[in-house]
Image 1 (cartoon, helix red, strand yellow):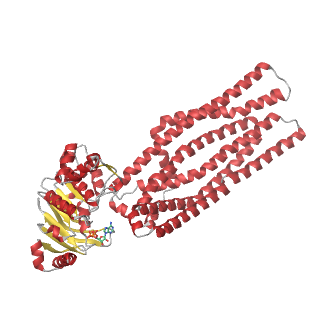
Image 2: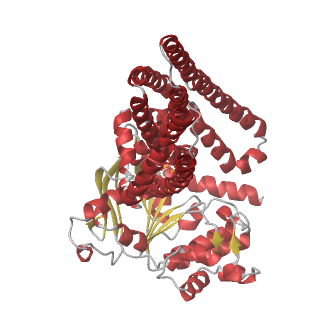
Length: 606
Ligand SMILES: Nc1ncnc2c1ncn2[C@@H]1O[C@H](COP(=O)(O)OP(=O)(O)OP(=O)(O)O)[C@@H](O)[C@H]1O
């Protein structure tokens, strides 16, 4: 599975990734322009400092000439510039970071929204941990690009321009010498980017895998503890962790070699050349000590931004790799079939034209389906469930029962054959209409963190308190809910872990009934609950089915004996169809399954 995710890594060019990152700046143009202006003023103030000192040394200190007024003005000017530079730098930094945080917030919401629109086929291939990694770690790395890299680069670039200008003003030859340094620095940067990219990609991939492993372990904690899998999972986690560590170490090695030390070597070489140059000149003529001071100072200042830029190159490179991964997720086209429909819906006319489910007749016409495009898991499925009828799907595990439900719920697109509701193709319905008229009850009901009422209402404004209570009463969940210390406001922990399986099931029934669906899709619970709860569940189910078209996956044949039509699936095909009595009389697969289950029950009873 991991392999597939890794293969998703796109090969977008760094330039296009960079351009795309910059696009996120545009909504904050005003703030950023102001920050740039302040930065420019602050930089000018900063750069002028050594020029003033040079003036002081060469015009006043060396000739030992100390007139009060000019010196006071010089000192005040110097002080003012330092204060202005510090103040403006502070303000521009806050502005930059503010814009950066806003941008990253936008990006994170965009990624989260995108993930929610993707089809289930995407999630089949992508481990949850990998997605968590994209939305948290990768966007965090991009944040660093905006917050630190961008502002540092702009500031340092301005600083370099200012320093060069001042150097040219002081001494042309030395300034030209420093210009020669620039290509060397650029070559170092390019080489670093080239070598580090691969290592960063690997480290990110390992981090994703680490998160995926962690997520899998947390999700399966129940089983891990029950089956004593702790040691195995610890070993697997530690192996991925080790690989992550190795990738990070390679990353650090490249950084340690390429970033600071190489630039330091360049700096010292430049310093030696400058001192040699001034020393040589001093044999022939008196040199200005102030100019020497200013030059050494500028050289140091020149390397300061260069060093900062090199340090940021590490963050920059990580951000580029992370951006590539995030953009690749944003560019995913594996939409949920419903989403595809919604985007197409814009030009399909007004919402009033969208069909409405009135009677709830469901029909499958020659539907075949494959998850991976290779193995057919459904073959020529045709049946009709008329208004108010119950159609039960039975068959051995893996025979295709859930796949039929997955298609009816539009979790996967129908490519071959057609599914229709009220004789209108499934694709024609809006997502809203389908979700409000087709109620799905899952085998393992998922409860959200919140309270009981919140779990029944699921954020719908259409469902008031009264409807919540009515829905609970309808499925007879009210009895246990009212016994809870806080009743309907009783807190629900993650996945409803503090409630029993039967209670969770009843809440999920109430949730489905609250929307008053026309069609019910049931995946019969296989979890064993006590007889009393089982009875409550069966009574609730029967009430729910009354007057509603129901497509029910049944594991226990005893629960669907009154179904209007039973479809027996085998390897994705309907091999038998009819009522309970008809199928028993046929003495085929259904009969065999029935006898097996009866036998099992009798054996238990004995
Ligand atoms: N998301 C998926 N991706 C790929 N193959 C899948 C996926 N879900 C199911 N399958 C395959 O499709 C086939 C039918 O599975 P399906 O879940 O529909 O069976 P089922 O009858 O509902 O089984 P069960 O009673 O065990 O739930 C199986 O071979 C299964 O391996």
